[in-house]
Image 1 (cartoon, helix red, strand yellow):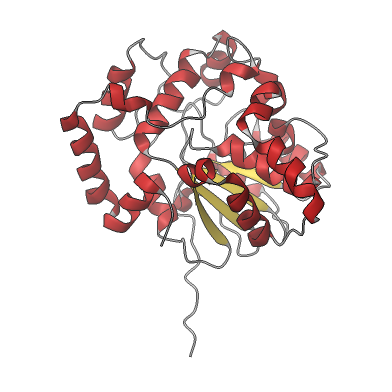
Image 2: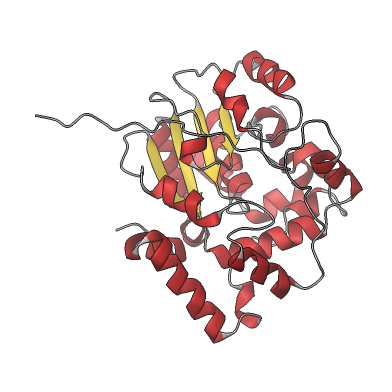
Length: 301
């Protein structure tokens, strides 16, 4: 006798300078929807680019941020976002940074979750927010509906940013460990796929083919070289304004600043051996050995 699947159930709302999780409550799912989920700065835009290339087979009709919106971002207002999503006629691929229990979960949609070592996440979001301009902070802090404290401007010292993020579990963003843990716990559901940033770095075409199979998208073999090229860092950097939200207008230097380096390990020259050991011990305590190993290295066995 087969066991009934324990589908995730939404148990709470999340509101902050970034979040309005209630948008999901009123979204009408379609059976072929795709949800791309991460903590933040873990390869979200990269996977959105990959999925866009697979869906449109190299002929993407617009900017990624427009055709694949961040659903739980609190701007624009919920009504505007839902109307735009309802009007989309292509196979939708939606972005979220929520943990599973703050997300209304569809049994029919496909979910792709991307993981990345938390230390790499911090170095990436440091660049993201240090280069954010006044318009970025105005959108997060000055628009109607803010719940909780505003998003602060980060100090110049990335080490200080890391210490706050580690000591206060994700501050000034949101909890890192619960986000990873919540998605890891549902990794065996039939409509969930886990990816890792390091695996995309090591063999992007292999991972792209795996994603295509998971999404049940057939790609003519002759198209693969073009799709792989379009998802490479060089192409995305050269066309960054198409990938960055609002064409990169929220960052000093535009989209090329948003699509920064795409590298890992920049923390190695800053964090002490003791800090690295503390991070790795915390990962095991929060996630268990298997998840902590995957988060560090990728490649689920």
